[in-house]
Amino acid sequence: MPARLWLLEGLPGTGKTTAAKRLAEMCEDVRLPARWWPEEASDHPATPAALRRRSADPDFADLCVLSFAQLVHREGGVLILEGSAFQSTIRFMFANGWREPCVGAYLAKWASAITAARPRLLLFRVVDVPGHFDQVVATRGQLWIGKLIAYVERTPVALTNDWRGFEGFISFWDAYQRLVFDLAVELKCPVLELEGWREGHRFAADHAFAFLNQ
Image (tube, rainbow, N blue to C red):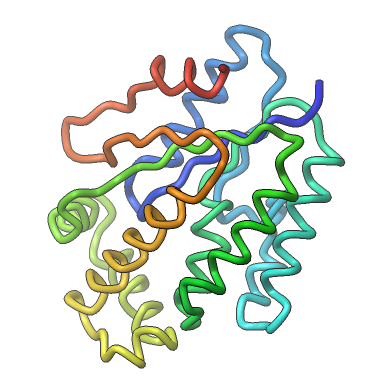
């Protein structure tokens, strides 16, 4: 079976991992060959740790395009990738201060490189970014948010905009999410927007699975 790309994107804590696991289980239930990798897996087939460490290199965009192109020609079956289309690529470009036209040019090359894998994108939106992270912190704890705030404060885009502390953290992710949704409009692959995780919310697995399998 040729490679099929099922891509899941959204802010941290929007439910990408939970959704990816559920989709992998649903594929197994119907005997559809599928594999899933956590977003930050060191051996991720599209965005391994070695590639992520090169996010500040001038040729990072070209390396990402090449990695995805090799993946879709090397692998078969459904490939469920959370956070690799945007979070592990475009988020780094945004953090390093790339302007939107440059990021858009990268995305066009990337989309062309993976066309043969008939990609489909699940995009999790957060309406209330501060409220979202308040809920996530209640679940994951202060250590988790502390590490993310420290990461954001070190990025070139945060230093340029003087984004500090929790408010700067929110500004970073709010701006990143707006960039993602602006870019998604330009994508030629099918995109399904879903509500990001919140307390009491359940992933619409059947709806997402039907969309991805079309």
